[in-house]
Image 1 (cartoon, rainbow, N blue to C red):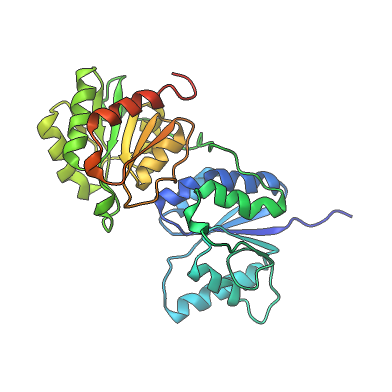
Image 2 (tube, rainbow, N blue to C red; image 1 turned 90 degrees about the vertical axis):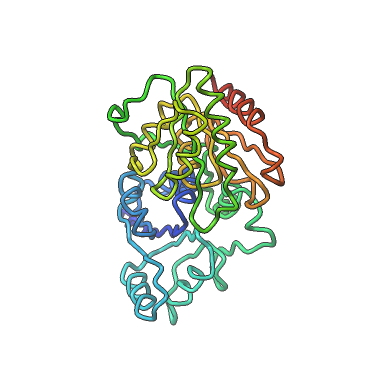
Length: 312
């Protein structure tokens, strides 16, 4: 008599960049549960990407509303699906609460930081280790081992409409609106753009509409720069990253996507954020405690080194 497929829930509500940092873990869980039904609980903004990835049988959306009715809706969803096991990759106060919402039970196997979890993953300094290392430790009891680098072959698009030459590089000078302290100064990106242009490499500035001013600063120093802010979909960003000569960016979602696709990438960090989180086969972290101590020549040199990783 054959066993029924297990009902598996993966919780990942993190921001755009966190979603791509978790790709190797998503894939490892999919491999481990090849014959089971896997559901992802994620943000509405990330749900289309999750469906596109093909790694999940179902994607549920959680807008992270803090109202009582929203929490009750999550409780109904969790109970109705009768999950056999939950991998809480978010592992924060909100998702710890989801475990308690199942009172009075029954509870599924639960991997995460919730008190009472069957497979607890609580330890000092958990948030200070690289994301992949954190997931490796969390999933070890199940024999699940994430790969070193992600497979994002599903994330691609035609980029012909941008009219870029064969040799172009991506610059990501922005960050989330609430974290301007994570931005290496735009004038430094302008210097990188000028250095690339001197080599015959066209700089293309990536970002949302709020980063247009940064693109203008770069263009003032480097007229060859192309402003693609607010012009790229996520699949198109993947397509650009797949074909770019290289990329330089801050600790922000688009940079982590670009690196994860496999583009030679330099991620510029100060002590404003933890310089351990980025993934990809050709990514280098360029960190100094203060952005004032990072010059453009050093970043360009790091980009040259990134291009030697995993081939040329």
